[in-house]
Length: 448
Figure 1: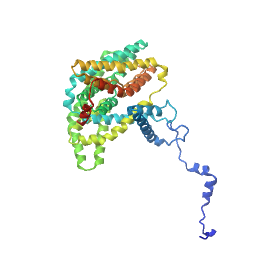
Figure 2: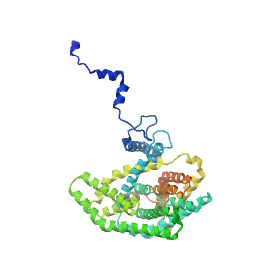
Figure 3: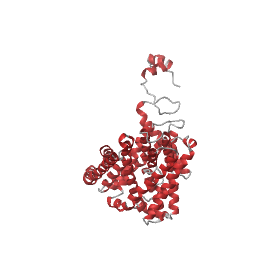
Figure 4: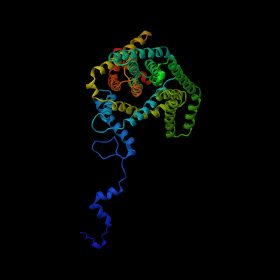
C-alpha cells in the first residue's frame, strides 16, 4: 500500500482558485466579453455573439434541411418539400429557432448563381439559337396569358389597374432553381425539352429584368409618359446587348485563357477557386455594370467557360457548392411563408394557384403543341414552368415598396410560390407519365 504524501509536499494552489470556487459568477463576469443579443437564436438560450450570425444561419438551416429532406424522402416525397418545411420551421412565423432571413436569402442567391453557371457550361450558342423559334414566342405568349389572368383576378378583387398588372407579372415567371432541379432529377436537362425549357427561362429572365427596370418609372411621375417607358426599355435592351456582346467577344478569349493558366499550376484548390471567382465575379459585375440579373450573368459566364478545354472539370468541381447553396435557396423561401395566410385568405390563394398550376401549364402546353412538337415534350415543358419563384419575390417586394401592390399581395405571391414549388415534382412526374416518356429515355438523356 502506498504511503500518503506528506502535507508539506502537496502543491498549494493560488488563493484565487478558492475564490473562483466560492464566487464563480463574480470572477466569470469580469472576463466575459460583451455580447449583443440577436434576433436569431434558440428560444430561451443565451444570446449569441454578433459575429456568429452567419455561422448560426448556415448551420441551423442546413441541419433543419437535412432532417426535413430525409423525412420527405422516407415518405416518398421530393426532398424539396422537406427543405421548404425546414425553412418554415426556421422562419419568424413559427416557434423555436429564428434564422436571419436576410443572410439566408443572400446565400441562396449564391446557389442560383452557381446553378445557372453550371447550366451554362452544358449549353452552347448554337444549341440556344436552335430553340429560339419556340422559346422566344412561347415565353412571351405564356407571360402575357399569365399576366392577363392575374390582372383579371386582381381587378375582380377591386385592385387598381396598375396593381393588377404588377400582380399578374409576378405570377408569370418560373423559378430558375425549381425548373433546373426538375430537369436534372428527371435526366432531361440535356434533351430537347431541357434546351427549350432553359431557352424559355432565359427569355423570361430578360423580360423580368425589363419589368424591374420599368417599375420605378411606373411609380414615378414620369410613369404616365409613353416616352419615359420607351426610353427605359431602350436603355435596358442596350445594356443587355452590350453585356452579351462583351461576354461573347471578349469573354471567350479571357476566361478560357485564365482557366488554362490556373490549370497549369497543378493545384486543385486554385482551379476550384478560379471557377467560383469567375461565376460570382461575372454575375456581380453584370448586375452592377449592366443591370442584368445575377442568374443571367452567371449563365453567360458558363457558356463562355464551356468553350474551354476544362469545362467538364469545372462542372464537376462546382457541383457540391451548387447542391449546398441550392438547398439554402429553398430554405430561404420557406422562411418567408406565414402559414396563417392559408387560414385568412384561402379563396384568394386558390385563385393564385389556379393561375400558376392550370393557367400557365395550359398556355405552355398549347404553345408547344402549336409548333407541332410531341405531346410528351409539351407536357414536360409545361410542367417544368408551372411554378413561380425568386423573381416573383423580388417583384413583390419592389412593388410593395413602390406602393404598386397592396400589403396582402406579397403574402399571396409567397403562398402561391411555396405551394407550387411543393407540388411541382408531382406535376412533373404525372406529366411525364401522361406523355408516355419511358424511364430509359431519362437515363439515356442523363448520360449525354
